[in-house]
Image 1 (tube, helix red, strand yellow):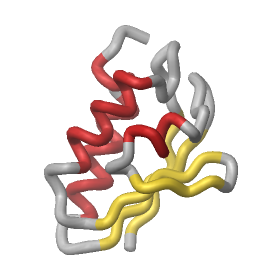
Image 2 (tube, helix red, strand yellow; image 1 turned 60 degrees about the vertical axis):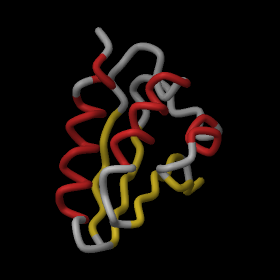
Image 3 (cartoon, one colour; image 1 turned 45 degrees about the horizontal axis):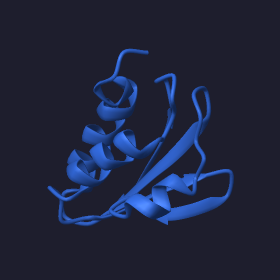
Image 4 (cartoon, helix red, strand yellow; image 1 turned 30 degrees about the horizontal axis):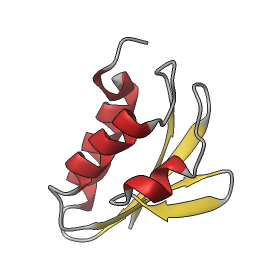
Length: 89
């Protein structure tokens, strides 16, 4: 199991389009992946659950991956978040 903390950098935070990018990316991996914000942990493959995190710009989330491709999954999600979900910040 690997965990990594990341700061949300895009202006709108984890809104619907950003969460959809997470779900799309997570679907490429076999590992079980969760995202935690302020003590609330949700599956990273659920758009609805990701939206309930209310992770705004500047907030820190923790990504946790457990499985055969956990390092690749963590690296890819960290890059997605660091790149602002491909939005301008």
